[in-house]
Length: 199
Image 1 (cartoon, rainbow, N blue to C red):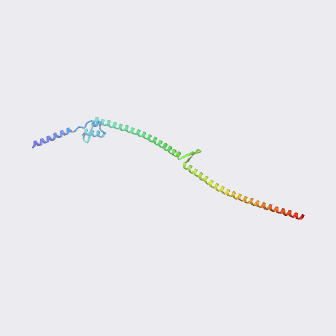
Image 2: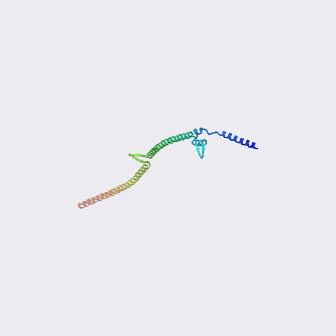
Image 3: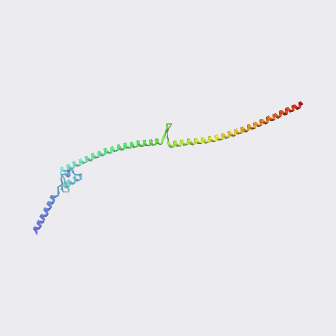
């Protein structure tokens, strides 16, 4: 039984030894090409323990420092590129906003010029011009109607005056005839009376 126990222990120790050898040892490519987190994990794996501390090889620590500084420089250059891109974008946005303002002002001016036109150097809106023209037309129609009624009244007064004049002429003519006839009669009577007196 002892042999069995010994063989079992030997078999177990060999299998642990073989399994320990099969686990790949961390490679330095993780330190060279990995992310910063992978590099820290690599240092934890390869470092040895001393009491509660980890002992790291100076070369590995320097390599990690170099990699971190390179990453920081890369990030800083990326930040600078992004800042310059942001500044360029801001300039473009400001330029586009200025163009937009100019274009909007030009558009408003074009719409105003389209909706209005210039008369005697004054810019008149089309609706104001339309109202002005219709006001003038209505005023002229009112003046025409008033003139028509005045003309009609004047014509009526003239016709009545001509009729009165005609009536007056006829009356005068009648009166003149009557007066002539009376005068003739008086002359005859006078001649007859003179003839009778002489005879």
